[in-house]
Structure formats: C-alpha cells, structure tokens
Length: 76
Image 1: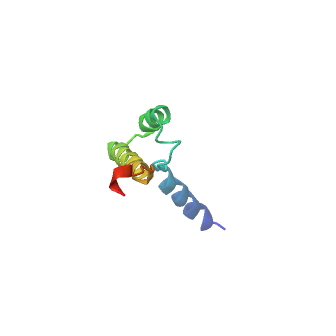
Image 2 (image 1 turned 60 degrees about the horizontal axis):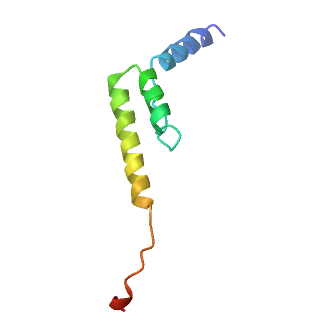
Image 3 (image 1 turned 180 degrees about the vertical axis):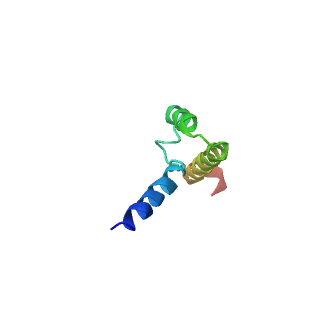
C-alpha cells in the first residue's frame, strides 16, 4: 500500500501539467466560443494548434457544401 501512494501522486502531478486543446467542431469553432477557448489556453503552441484545427474544420465544412445548379436549357 505504501508504494501506491507515491505512484498515484506522480500520476496526478503528471496529468496536471498537460493542457488539452478542445476538439474542433461547429460549437467550439463558432466565433464567440472560439475566442473563449483561445483565451483559456495557456500555451501559445496550443493556441496556434487550435486555431489551425478550426481553420481546417471550417475548410472541410465548406468543401462539403453542395448546391445543385442545373445547366441552361440550350446546353442539352
């Protein structure tokens, strides 16, 4: 039992130092929540990673948009 206490303390302390970035999705990449999420991130590298992830998410969303445009009648 005495060996478990130091191991648990190391695991808890190791987890405290790591900051995770939010998952990019429609809710977290919305302008209001995006600014809040970026301001909560402490590391500049995490801010840049989250910004790039949101840009990539938005590009993917724009590529998926599709609109039917019928050809003109004279091109049949």
